[in-house]
Every structure is written in structure tokens, then in C-alpha cells.
Length: 339
Image: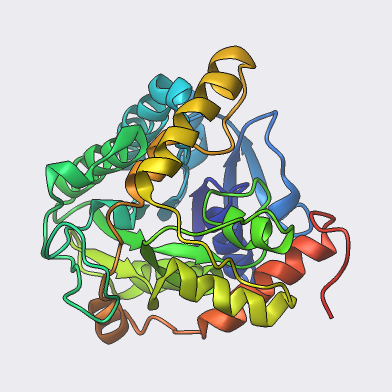
């Protein structure tokens, strides 16, 4: 059986490609000529040079494939990339689904985001309180920024494409951490910046963390056992941001931040940083405005459906964060390897 993985040079896609190769599956990966292939450089895959916005390259990539994992996305909170985010995440998804259907692909797993999951109410500070689930649509006020909005639109496209002859299963990863975060992703910057000593304070927010290796297994389980047209939250443990820092403190030996910054202050700093780095220096800002806006709504969700129906593994988040720190150290992102 031949399967195609898009986004294999990225964090989730790279870990998924590695997991599939370990299962001795025949894996194709869709990559750009300019992509950094560190995440898959040492594994055996068939490289298909192409782009989600080049339909002919997609037709060649899916030809002869039985299954497709669509992990590719522009995961960025930089407002200057707004057009590219929509083109890649929405139009690119549409192009790939059309190519897969035409090629006779029987089953697709689409990587969405926890960002498309609805929350019980607007701003719960308690990770043990009511949780978001697959049945809850997102509130419009929670779809902040181009990334969230584009992923929601792409998910709607994916669900609409699913029928009795073309099965599409949606997975909604939470905040993954672990090895092979080459870029790194916005989530991966949390342990990386902490280990670098670049976290002066914290916000009152939270998230659901999961080992990226479990996210990869969740994709495979969704391909094997997921119900067409349905979505599955791939998550593990709900934590406040301060709780995450406390775990990282145990791993790295660094003190957790003690100062809680008000959102209005961080937003003001983010707008100044946007003006300096984005507007003047034409580079991605260190403190993206959209990213700070998102933190107003803690993403506390339940993964019960994926655990019960798919058998989603639940590696302790402490282990996942330790793997993240160790990988960043081993690959030169940190000056010294943690003991």
C-alpha cells in the first residue's frame, strides 16, 4: 500500500512520516524544492517535488496512492502572511482533495487544528472545568486571525468532500511538543524559549499538550479506525501556561517566571514589536499580535472520543516536554545539553 504525506518536512508531518516508515509502509512525501528536509532526511521515502498550489504536481503525487495524510499547512500568526496562509490552507486543501478523489484514493486523513473546536464558554481559567469537544462548533469570537479562520474553512471543505466512495477523517491536534520541531512551531517555541531563558513572565492562559509522537499515532489510528466525516481531538492534558513552565523548570533547572503580565500590557508590547520587526524590518515578529490575542481563550478540551474510539496513546506530557528540550539541545538550538 502506497500512502502520501503532505507537510512531511514539518513538525507533525515529519513525525507521521517517520512512524509510517517504521511500520514498513511505502511512503511518498510531497516537498518543495526549497524545503528544509531535516525531519525526514534520514528515513526512506519517495520524494515528490510539488506544491499544494500546483494541481499538476498533486496529480502526480497521488497517482497510485491508496491513502493520503494531508498535514501541510502554513502555521503562522504573522499578519503579513495572511494571503499565503489562506491560499495554502484553504485553496491548497481543496486542490489536494480534488486530486485525491480523481486518482481513486479511497481514504484521507485531514490534519485540522484544535482551533476549530468550540469551548463551553468564552474564558475559563480552570483546566479542570468544562471542556471543549468535537460536537461543539467554535464561537466566531474564538476564530482569531488568519490561521484559525483558514483552518476552520479547510476543515469544512474536508468534511463536505467525504462520502461513501471517498472517506475523509478529520483529526484536530492540540499543542504538540517533542522531537523534530525543525522550524520551530509557535508551540515548540514555548519550551525552547524557556530553556534559553527568554521567558520573563507569563499570561493567564492555558492549553492542551500532547506528545507529537502520539499525534502521529493518532493519525494512523484515524486512518485505520476513524469514521468518515467525523473529527477527533488529538490531545492529552490540559495545563495552565504557568503549570507548563513549572514542568519545564523541573526538566531544565531554570526557575519558572514569577510575574504574571496582564493581557493589555503584552498586547501593547506585541503591537510595538509588530511595528518594529514586521513593518520596518520585514521579518516575522517575536511577539505576534494574533498569537497574543489567541491566549485570551484557554484551549481546554477533551480527547475522550479519540482515546475510546481510536485508542489514542497518552504519553505523559512531562516526557514529551523532556524529549522536546533534549531534541533542541541535540540539534544545536540550545548551547548546552541538559543533564
